[in-house]
Length: 196
Image (tube, rainbow, N blue to C red; front, side):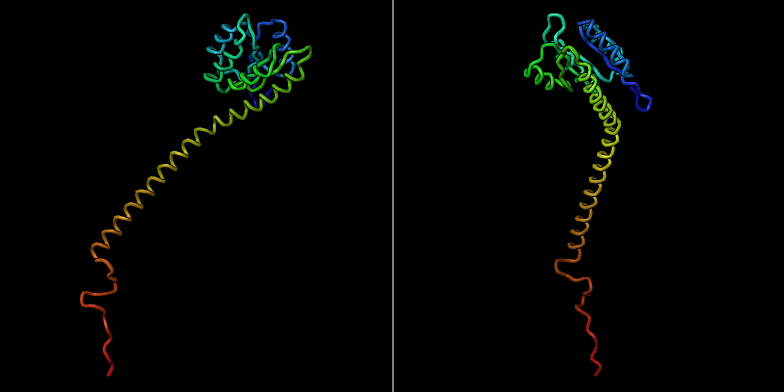
């Protein structure tokens, strides 16, 4: 699946080889580029070397004997690879797990079933939209930070000018004395001579 020349890259992390391979083939047929890792350690190694190229991750919740392996990977990606949109895929779904995964940073939580392809396809499409939005925000963020910095500098200059004007006003009042009118001379008000 491409958009403006960018191929969406999906990392599939699942110790069930048959499921992982079938998802890889299916998503590749949909136009995505996929990489499969069957163990947590190989997934971590791949992320260290190629994490910048990953856009979406399909992560199995339970791998080996670790019931939180997928959750740990989602937390790792949320912390070190925040552009990756992660989706938990599990055969052991329950509401508590779903809530925990979402709090850890997962975009979605899908239960494996006899035919989860349609659900995975739809979820991946939504994850791609989320990834593209994150990418746009990442490019805009430096500009926003720069605009904020310039705005703060301008506000500081305005504040400095206001203080300077207050000092000038205070000095003028001290020099002319309180209540004096600038139109009055030292000898008092100017009067017109009588014409008679």
